[in-house]
Amino acid sequence: MTSKLKFPSDEWIKELSAQLNASEAYAQSAKDWEGDFVFIVEPDSAYDDTAYLYLGLYHGKSPDAALLPSLDDREAEFMLSAPFSVWRQVIEGKLDAIQGMMTRKLKVRGNMMKIMRYPKAAKEIVSCCALIPTDFGD
Amino acid sequence: MWYFVSPQIVFGPDSLEALDELNGSQALIVTDANLVQLGIVEQVQAHLQKAGLSVSLFDQVEPDPSVQTVQRGAEVARGHQPDWIVGLGGGSAMDAAKAIWVLYERPDLHPAEINPFMPLGLRQKARLITIPTTSGTGAEVTWAIVLTDTEEQRKMGVGSRENCADLAIVDPALTVNMPPQLTADTGLDALTHAVEGFTCSWHTDFTDGLCIQATRMIFQYLPRAVENGSDMEARERMHNAATCAGLGFGNAMASLAHAMGHTLGALFHLPHGRAVSIFLPYTIEFFSHEGEGEPARFAALADAVGVNSGWGLTLAQYIRDLCQRIGNPISVAQAGIEQGDYLASLDKLIEDAFNDTQILTAVRTPTYDQLRQLFLYAYEGRPVDF
Image (tube, rainbow over all chains, first blue to last red):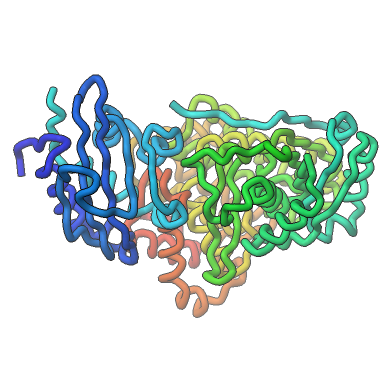
């Protein structure tokens, strides 16, 4: 894959899913993980829409991913929301996702006890994001 | 955007007298039975009573406190309704005090739910004082809480910036009774905090200086404090160093040696400082073989503490020399762990280290195979060459 994928989009989240499925490090670190995510991209000065990116995660693999028409379209155990520009900083490696959550730039909803037991898996998801050539609409 | 969190710190000889000035009506001391026997609890109690406070006691904190212990402590707090909670002891007592305080204020939470990602709303019922009696953990100034899940034999790191103490009292007189082995183990814990706080990926301008100064002081004063526990200059500087290191790594993070040490300590019941310090030189070597600018930071730290030739590999050897000088092991085998038991636990050691939050800030993340190799090299005492 050489062309850039627009963020947020159905193609982009499907590519993240493919990257996770190709990652041995993610497979090992999330081998017991069960819990889907919806990433909510909120509008800001650089993006004027709201997008819902669904990422299915099960036992070290990502069986499904899609851009959702609305939040009600799929159920997910976890939600991570932030303005577009914060997502961009995370994807470009300029903001550590965990620090973003700790400073509440990224807001997480779901069972934190569960998330905190899988720090390496969280790091691998962010690493896979960085592998996607991304078009932020500049 | 990031934070630097610290309690008000009272330090130096006679700093326990700061308790005389407290305002309040009821204090709960959270500690362990040993400190009751040593008479240290009585000293603290006398100062609190001088301030006009009624004092109650929870002295059931064990080394590596469990979830159940802090839940029991929170019940005691709810019975006494303190407006001050005083964590008195080593890291276990202070961490237990932090957790008990949170659960006293937030009875709706399970200890594992204490996290930095959402507001806790503390300080509605009480505030927290921490008083260290060892020079190592830095728990008096950090917001991290390490509890042990006894069912899974696993340490878990929880905590929130909000549960950082309001007041830390760093009085060197409280450390005089520490035996040499405890002095060595806790001092090496402080060294590991300082080195990892300086070299982890979350280090900042606000933490670097504290970590450098702590590292310098530990190299200079730890051997003296181990050799002669009555050397009050060494005791005081080590007590200050541990708190500086706590501020340094507590506002940055620790790293891979802590992730590995937590798992070893939880499975083989090794003192925390000994466990993490065994791994420190191996992780420095691992970081120094490859990475993104890491050798420069190790070089800067090595230069700051007077290791002239610079790179991290030399710093690693310098740390091993210090460990040997104060009689501590430089390999897992030297720590007395049987090879068969260790190898049988290797998969769990790797798994738990990968699921330890401290691994997030390692400047070079090992693969599963590399982590396995690191555990094996550390067992044998082989310098890391990959």
